[in-house]
Length: 340
Ligand code: CP
Image 1 (tube, helix red, strand yellow):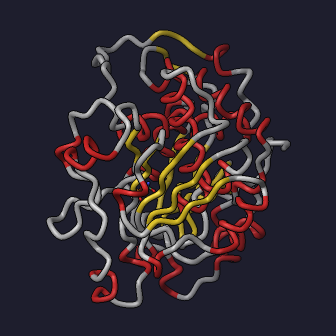
Image 2 (tube, protein in one colour):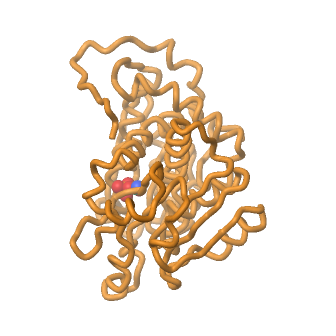
């Protein structure tokens, strides 16, 4: 795809070559993300970071990514703090905010809302999560992480075996990741969920049509055997009609060290888009895994900055300019290794 000036609304926009290009630029972002070098290539540019739904890592990492490239960030963090709460339309909001920004990142609880907003925007818009639909930058950082983890085992994404566990119906990170993995060859998907929270049929059918193996499991232990990656997700309680209904599924699948040791292969990488629900009734990813070297959840969050910097660099057409505006940093920088 031509990145320059374009929206990123769905992973359907990407071909394998596009993903490779994003990852190539992301690799180059490492010294800036780790603050051993500084670049001011986006000096004067403004990001509108519009989050109309709760977020920690997506909002802050998009903001950090833009700052690390030298740009400034303006943000809204909830509907009630914006004039959407007064009945303003997405169209008007987009016309206004795109006059203040060079690029906009947006999260909103309604599926399709970011595309609606983008159609009225005068600047590129990146989808940071629209309801249960998609979360493209999360899928990119997940895939980037998978690639790096497999590189350590001399493996590639082709032939990957992955278990996706939990609320596969509402989990937009899972939807985007499945679609993106569908671009690769001979991927084996173990979909582990209660029947009521199964992955959307259209996503599964598309994977099968492309020749991938899709196995459906109702229990965790069976689904996590013989996989390279186990990708655990939270029950998306905010998508359920009532708290009572969400509570029915919370805590149904819990991965902890004992289950991992008994049922996973020794090199199986553990991932989660985060946040994990660490309340007693949930604990889908137990904190007793925190010292497990195969737990990649904080490598995922670190990689999010690299991938989001790469998206800005490609869309704003400065990927080849970054190093021309760079210099070493002069302040103390904490050592960030080992990155667990
Ligand atoms: N993974 C993710 O989207 O996290 P946040 O909701 O904290 O942004």
